[in-house]
Every structure is written in structure tokens, then in C-alpha cells.
Length: 191
Length: 86
Image 1 (cartoon, chains in turn cyan, yellow):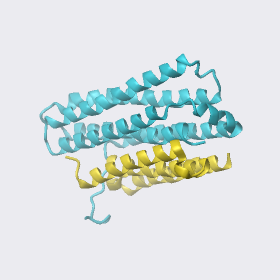
Image 2 (tube, chains in turn yellow, red):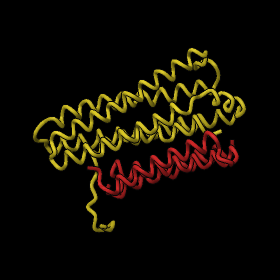
Image 3 (cartoon, chains in turn orange, brown):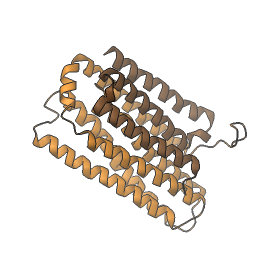
Image 4 (cartoon, one colour):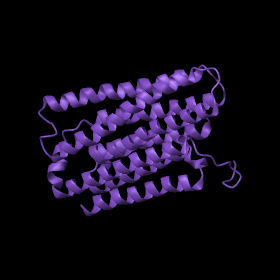
């Protein structure tokens, strides 16, 4: 295995993509802290409202995003190895996982709202909807990015800039996965 | 298609998700507080794995990798600290 010194270090995607990714991750860090701040004000209420969440939705969504991330990693490798037909199919698979996540989110939100659990119910549900809603918004942007990646990776020969765009788009999708990995336990388990 | 390292990392992430699910929902014989600390620590170890191996920050310039490692450490400590003091 190559040592750190021997490995060639390179930035995946364009540098600007990382400004955007770290910016988004910082916004979410503030949201995590805000959630914990208000939770500390009334831990009993947060614990009892949290009991109303269906953890299975959150866990299945975590597994869906992990699977989508793996498919995106494989797609980036296919692009680098010039296996033209594989990449768009793998990205389409990742999009299917993202769409399934969205489908479950619709069912979960619908279930909550039908039980009169809305952002107006209490502080827990306010932050539950704000945090999961913000994350879902990023996932929908991620699906648009993946659509663009399918269009690009269907071309027979990609320029270095296009390969870089594919890498940056892949990293954005991994960020969507990464943020959910923290949000899920924070909202559904931590009490 | 994925390589051995990425496959192993993915397996660890799936396993960690299931372990957190069990500890988080049933607490597996430990108290709420221990289970909560455990799922927070596991979550930040997981995101570090995603960053290093899926986002390929493992092979990124040290500055970029350092920002990411710093994020995991600082935000992880902040979340854990705010939970424990809350």
C-alpha cells in the first residue's frame, strides 16, 4: 500500500466546489447546534415528541443513501477507467435510491401531518421539519446534479474539465449522504 | 468495480448504521445517555469514513483534508459537548 508521502495528492473536483460543500456543511453544523440548544431548554418535551418518530424510515433512508454513495463511487471509477456505458447506469441507480428516499420522506411527512404533528406543534417538530426539510432540499439539488452527470457521462470522450465536474458532483452527493448520517441519530435517537 | 478498500468501508458503514439503530432504538441494555453518546461518536466516525474514502479526501492536498478532519473533530466535539451539558 502506498505511503502518504508516495501518494499523489489531488483535489477531487474543482476547488470552488469545496468552498460550496464546506459552506453547506458549516450551515448544517449551526443547525445541529441550534437543535441541541433548544433541546437543552426542554429535554422532556423533545424526548416525548421524538417518541412519535418512526425510526425505521430514518434507518432505511440511511441505508438507501449509503447504497447511492457506493454507486456514485463506482460511476466515478467507471469514468476514469473509460468504461463509457457503466457510469450513466450506475448514476441512474444512485438516483433511484434518492427518489426512494424522497418517496419515504413524503410518506413520513404525510404520516406526521395526518397526526397533527406539524412545525407549529412544538419546538421539536419545528426543528424536525426544518432540519429534514433543508436536507431534503439538498437531496433534490443533488438529484438535479446527478441528472447532469448522466448527460455528461453518456458522451464517448470526456474532457479533463468534464471529469472534474463529475468528481465535484459526486462529492456533492456524498455530502447529502454525510449530512443525513449526522441528522438521523441526532433527531431520531439522541435523548 | 468498487475496489476492496471502498467495499470494506461500505460494509463498516452499513454495520455501524445497524448497530446505531439497535442501540438507539432499544438501548441494548445500556442507559439513554450512554446510547446517545455512542450514536453521536459512531455518526462522526462514519462521516469521516465517507469523506476520506468516498469523497477521496484521503488523497487530497493536506490543507483540504485538514479542513475536513477539523470539521469532523470540531463539530463532533461540539455536538457531543452540547448534548452532555444539555
